Image 1 (cartoon, one colour):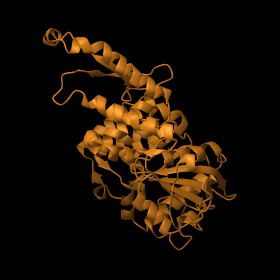
Image 2 (cartoon, rainbow, N blue to C red; image 1 turned 90 degrees about the vertical axis):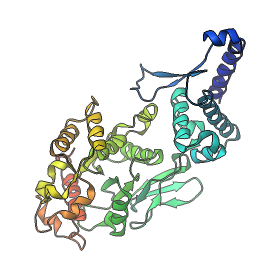
Image 3 (cartoon, one colour; image 1 turned 90 degrees about the horizontal axis):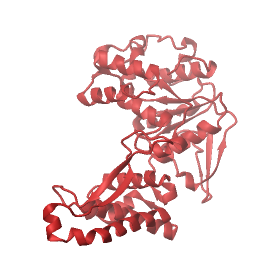
Image 4 (cartoon, rainbow, N blue to C red; image 1 turned 30 degrees about the horizontal axis):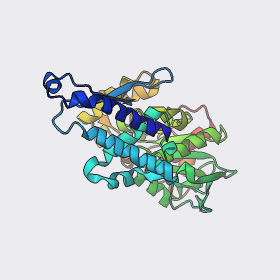
Length: 383
């Protein structure tokens, strides 16, 4: 709360010093009036313990619209954060937006300013008593979540539960036989696996847990995966099923390495144990999928891929897959598995592929084979 108050005090102090010059007609004509400047974290640049890049927010400034609007938006968000901290009642970013729709104009404005302030103060959103609406889902009785409210989540292998905020969780209870964790990019694929009760598929080496962040994951989903990464036994793999394109790999990167937008929290959110199970563009021919079944890459795909290739820390195999996509001009979405020829053995474990009632579904065949291979041999090739 002191950080918010100090920010406002800095602004008011500068404003009081600038007022005589700002309202002097001679100074205005010469353009020599003092400016009010606030420095916020620049989340577009690489952040580290030794380097905390900043950007300036200045008033007055030359702009097509009102130059005071960015300050008004910033301090309205700061005011709402201060209110949430003072009252001790968490506030969602959506609630903030609806407190002053005309000022903010879009939800994205609130989202950006909340993260800017959190990064500037080097706090998490939770420290500011601000939450984003939960959207992640989990399925599987191998993990039970006990909430502080007394509710219990995660007792079903066919129905999804909303992943709660970490602040609402009392404790986790992991099943003794939990054998694997699968993080799925797309909700539609996740719901299909839930309907098929894939978490307890008889062809797998044991029960598992299925999680989705519905695309780019929210903080609650990332916190859950990080908690599992830190606490599960090393023999339980945490695997990710994402599209074999630049955006799928970027989503995988958010889970494993953290996001650019929330660099200040990556130390507490990145889960280094997450492995890329698939889909790999380079494996499709071995699955009997013709190139004509793949979608051509768009200009946005190409731009995203080239942007990711500039990341110095990008794993070599991920880089190879992106380069393969750019060379082939095709991208592989998870749904393309439906084009796999059922009669063709992809060489991923013939004996296991024919076990169980749902193994005829290409997606299930693919996942059963790969998960079994990883569980049987932790050193099995995976990205």
